[in-house]
Image 1 (spheres, rainbow, N blue to C red):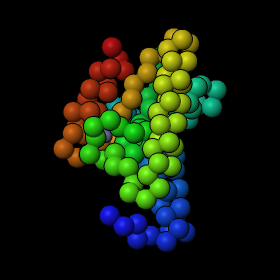
Image 2 (cartoon, protein in one colour):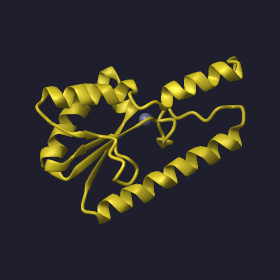
Image 3 (cartoon, rainbow, N blue to C red):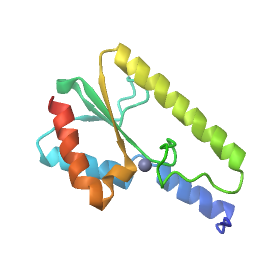
Amino acid sequence: MADVHKPVTRSYNMSRIKGKDTKPEMLVRKFLFSEGFRYRLHDKKLPGKPDLVFPKYKTVVFIHGCFWHGHEGCKYFVVPKTRTEWWIDKINKNKQRDLVNIDLLFKEGWKVIIVWECELKPEKRERTLQSLVRKLTK
Ligand SMILES: [Zn+2]
């Protein structure tokens, strides 16, 4: 598949994808808030700046984009056909960083929950959100 975007357009798209208030994250936030959960956002004091922090449950939640975080075996994780090596290297570094951060959080006594973007697609969303609530309150 050819990359039809001009570089400028592409970097605009990427910045949107990488932005903090991405749609999957907002979806989780809105749902949990409506369920009565209260949380901190992007806590810089914690490894990896978790998307949601629940001090009451000593739990953090990351909402991971399948592409940026290299979701293994996921249909949304497709390495671009151009600059393939560069992308693989970049995504591997992201994955490595994720592992290090999760390990640090474990060591600090946090429970870590990862929600993948693909688990929030309409057909899976309800189940994912319910299971998130169970994991949080367990
Ligand atoms: Zn995925």
